[in-house]
Length: 420
Image (cartoon, rainbow, N blue to C red; front, side, top):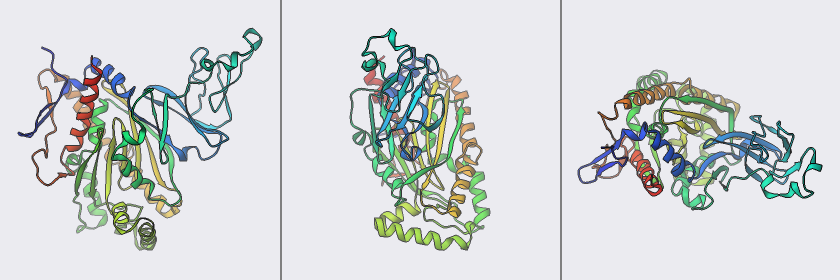
């Protein structure tokens, strides 16, 4: 008998088991593409990537080549980067500035709004050929922004972005409010791949339980760097943000360039950190300022956007191309007005822990790939256990597994709604 895809749940006994078939079955992957990635709001980019009219970036979203542009009237566009003539990718550059794009195959030219401007040999076509809606670059069916974060959906209908984000919206604000002049992407795009199922990275990104063992080397490094008496414990809570989104919010031993000084940074930066704290308090009030400055957050926005607001801020997406393979993109985000001194520490923190060559990411990649290897025995060893904290009273601790259960409940709902 074929193993069921549905999680096995018993709230009274504290049981939550996820079938490992969900990580290896090609049929499940195809259903996910249709039920999740064709339906959900998906992250496209950040406004700071297009600082001037005419700017653009290209990237893949759910397997589709996308062209994210800003036109001369400061309007943003999410274009399918595919020529309507024969289907070639139109813009082949990663980023740049241009009012128009020419397809290399037959020379059709499109404005950065998607409008068809030039058709070589136009005498062979009807006079109004260029005005045909079907001859323009296609736009994403839905395109919206939350602050400076832009999203697309390939479903023509569905809930609006703000409703979809639910409680995650306030956590995006906690990121944006760190600057009075706007947040900006710095340092380009980090790209790497993982031989593992995409859902493993979704789980890992909000898994506080693995930190002490998987990242013990980094925690020991912090202890040595900051002095043997420095507290290396992590403590906080996990929260269900609705619609499959979840976050862990906690106190941690690392410094935060936004306003959490540590001895490793030396006395020279202490006054600057204190000034940032004062500005946050003046703008947002003491309670919210303290929360932004002192607490770290790891958030998953279903299905595949992760915001790590920790010793630096990383925006991360991961796109599956097969049941056992994903492509990861990551960006560092920082206050636009940040000093060179603090920016240096922020980028050091980003590469030291969060980057593909840092303390954390190689550990996480290895753990994910070892899990994927283990799932080859999914017929015999059928389930993952993510029940930690189900019977805990007084809220979910940061190292419980509520966050993963939020993700899997939404995954299950969407897979069941879509059917076979």
